[in-house]
Length: 281
Image 1 (cartoon, rainbow, N blue to C red):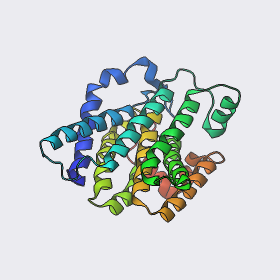
Image 2 (cartoon, rainbow, N blue to C red; image 1 turned 30 degrees about the vertical axis):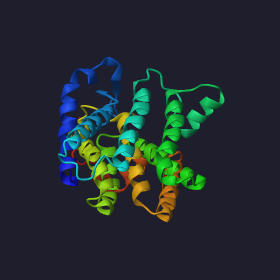
Image 3 (cartoon, helix red, strand yellow; image 1 turned 60 degrees about the horizontal axis):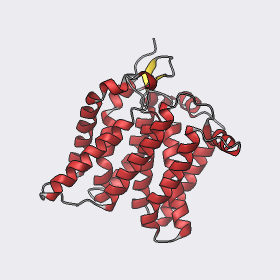
């Protein structure tokens, strides 16, 4: 399966899953007020995980019959699949939580220091451990490399979540982050591994922009983590060191300044952010 086909298959798969899961998304426990006070189902990013699972299961089955299996079930595809499934599950637990109190790194860490494990704290701790597991295959037993690459994946997941504050925003940011990775990967195994997921992400963009669903932590964290995995697989060690430093700065900056305010004050960013969005009533 080539990159273009994989991207389109991802779009189609998530639309099928989205339609099949219509009743599930309408469940009352998923409804949250969005930035305009409208009740919108959150956690819809779990659809990305289900869609990718369907795709990869189908690819494996077809591959057993030597159909469309040019690259085989590669390490890149396995890592992307595990990243999406794991981070989507951790994010969905947080999305579905009835009571959410602590916010941000500091809030969750303060709660844990009091012996309280919030759903956000579970996501933070579980995501960090999962990121280390995802970084292990390419670290080759090097502790520093393991920690840096694990931090890259975890910080990418968290940063994506920080952009999920307005309809379509995190998807647009994700696509912009994916494009250089896609160019660098070309038609190689990493490009083939990421394409179905990003196709699925774009497939949910109309519903996100139309305020019919919110990706939530489940979708933002899963997409960010997968892009982090792609960066770990594609970049050389120096490039990964620079990337993790940039991600760390952006994550820390989000604790001090509001990305939404910055976007609103910069006309080109504001125009891109509002593009395709439902007009304010």
